[in-house]
Length: 472
Image (cartoon, rainbow, N blue to C red; front, top):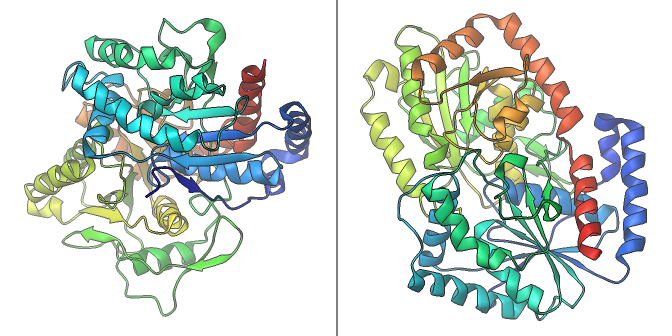
């Protein structure tokens, strides 16, 4: 049985971006790709992660690699395999980078198991990767591959999609564990300058914010009829089953139909005209789904209108996140403890992951139907669900943590200075759900800001500069 899965990514037309970014930016991208191919020569580019579905990293890779194929840049994507103890350890390191001290420093036996798993994966990677090739590794799950691949002659960069603006004993423990592996990488990529550990030399750190694809199933334009049809079909909106299945455009340009259904925990469903507050994220403690639920309860105790919908992936579908099932179970227990009148206005929803495009269009419909989108994280590497919600011209309430700070600028949403302040969260909900004109203006400004700052052409140009640095 092969440990490394090679993911085939459909080609995506970069030319479609012109309607969003304009001809000048598109021309700059095409010219840069042509020049980059000449510098790349016969080298290949490899990107390695720990999952192909679930979460923003996998979603971005599907998009960016699709555009890279269209621009004739040779990139292959490998997904490593690990066992439960491996992913439990890497999740612990992930949480420590976000300041959570649970678990303490990694012991010698655990570190040994971590490298045993990665060494086995490296054997298969090195059957494909040649000396001089460029390798981009993603997050703590892959960090231990850096010395193995670099030792075989590859030029290695490590991409960290998470981070924290401040340091404590937990972050120190995480970086002490990762540093011996990462010192073999030539370049280190972070979403924000504040996330770069002080032991990484200035010339070896690159800042690359993530991006959205406006034409992916998760972000493509959907009219109100399509949105309501999709939501009724997957079981989260009242109004009866649609007469015909919902259609959507897949990432490869072909048409698909919605065949799956969400797993919905609810005592009642919102009607088509009920205002709905939506948070879409992993079932991750740092996303604070329970806090969103209790903050909404504070709002709902005084306001008779509105529903809350908390949506995340099917808990068995994200292989590199062993905490998901536990966090969902905690949300379920706390949902049951809500006062009955509030509980009937809260939905817990898990979305199937078997079909990535279908999952994306379900999220798209949820966000487009939302009156308000929330990302009340306690810590956040970047929080791309914020940009996704903003792209759909929806007002977003987000915590003033991590990359959310970069996305929600004045006039484009509401930042919560303290994500634990549920009264402030409830007040923000009241503001946006009662002043519809202000919410509309905020959503329009948010969409324009995303188009200017967080579309994939900029992301690809920054990666080209990173790979140029690796080739020097």
